[in-house]
Length: 261
Image 1 (cartoon, one colour):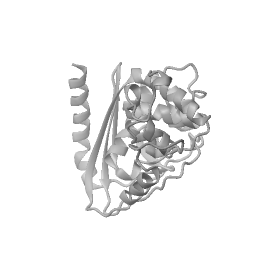
Image 2 (tube, rainbow, N blue to C red):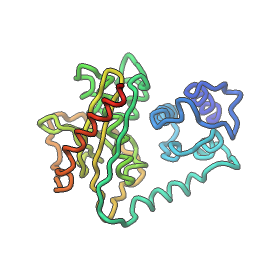
Image 3 (cartoon, rainbow, N blue to C red):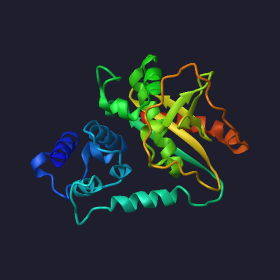
């Protein structure tokens, strides 16, 4: 029964005939991007599938079935091994360094819906505070786009964030409206820059990677409550982040100019 549900979801998102799906069918089309995998994730959890970060890495329909415990494929990745590997990666020792993550997304890729509060994609990917913030802006869809890009940029810059449930990684704003990234409500070290055009959203995140990467774990949390008046956690700034913040703004402008033309 669950395999039939999965087959229908994959068929709909990838626009491939459901009867033609085999274990070697690549997850292509919309499912080839991280945003497409997020839509798959949301659709699966709406059907009571458990959150599994491995679905963001599998390459074929057979591997997806294997990751969800719905069958095996000779080409499938061992989901438990992948999760263990990820856990090891988040605790590996490395020298302190600055890493930059950048993400650009076409706004047209985001689902266009009537009610952002009720749509399963926006419910599963964005927290209550993020939805409320976006809906207060002049262009909600653009705001959702930059929030999505911020989360993706952070995941690219800091490997400890790769397998977190989307609700645990949140874009919050301080009293001056400056955006920050937080995990479980605690602001993480880094500098975030957001921008968008009429058609594109963009985010860049500079992350200061400590000598020992924190392990945030893989357990999904419930959405953070909508508490607009709650003081945001404090944020430490490092000399390195201050030194490169101006470069980040310049880089944001340059990339958007090149992309637009």
